[in-house]
Image 1 (cartoon, rainbow, N blue to C red):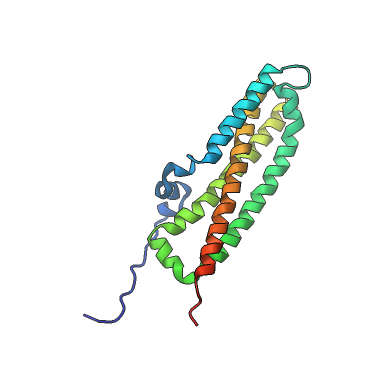
Image 2: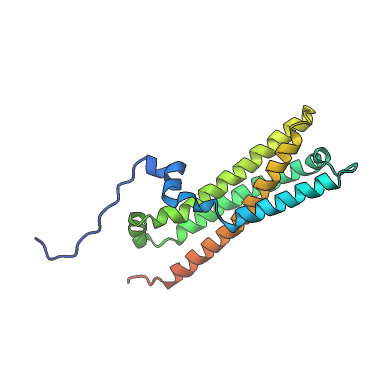
Length: 183
């Protein structure tokens, strides 16, 4: 038996534990039960009720879709890139000596999963906008109200969720500032 310092157990990752669904099992479904989700539901429902109640020429789903699809597509693609850049910044903020401990305690997965989820949300936004543009071009107006409603929800949810990611990066930066380098 050695009296030297004990080495911490090295966590062996499996492929399954590094996938989106594997990380979701670690984080559980708390990422979906956030204020971002509820605010997106409230705003989307309000917009839909407003559109239906004020359905006059120029304010229905089809005309709104033609006005918003391109703009929302551009915004979604831009924010998709910004989230990836924020992920890069966040990874640089992790103190290298803490990474194995964070991995062992599954804190690293809990910090990184929200970025993956945000990228998935923005990707879903991009795909939904593309579907809306295709439906408009093919004049498939019966599907546009559903996809516009879905796009409004996804865009709002992703926007609010991305704002909450800012808080995660700020907390991590503040925690990183407390760690003193061993010299």
